[in-house]
Length: 232
Image (tube, rainbow, N blue to C red; front, side):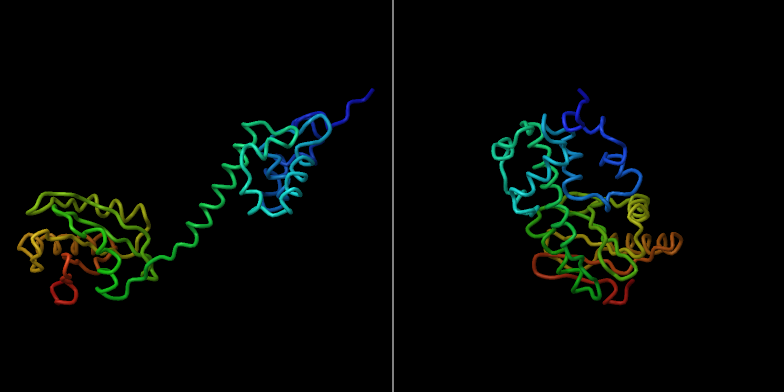
């Protein structure tokens, strides 16, 4: 008797029925949700292909991925052909999708003024007993690409490496940078070292064609902007 393809895994199917090959040849967007789940589980049971089993699982959740994502490992294992490993794979994939959606929903901060920088960064420095130096990287629309700590020091200061600043900015494809550091003492006035560092980074930015837009000194009570004060 000729074997029915239903008793085999994906590898034994006709090429046009294989979701993995379909993804490679036509792209992920053409696959149905059942085909995507079939790739995760790899095989069905004696009576169903992986796609058919996936369709049945989806149907049991009203063909709604959000509802499917609420199922536990035990609930998924009630479907014949779904063991613990397959159930975990489905749950992990749906959880990644949920987290991706959350990440995409995060709105990037837009920097138009020194106040915007302060509001974006003040939580990083609140109640810190030591000094930290942070880099904000902006795109052409002045949206924050990334915030990254450059150095951490003692109560009286921190060491800043221009090479690290611009290496980081280049890796993030930043068009503009802003630097920030805190004064644990609460004194908002820049030190001679602060002014020297600012000038050094500004000159390096000209060479690298990644301009320094501002340098903020931040304390728990407020901030000092080099740009606003005309020092930059």
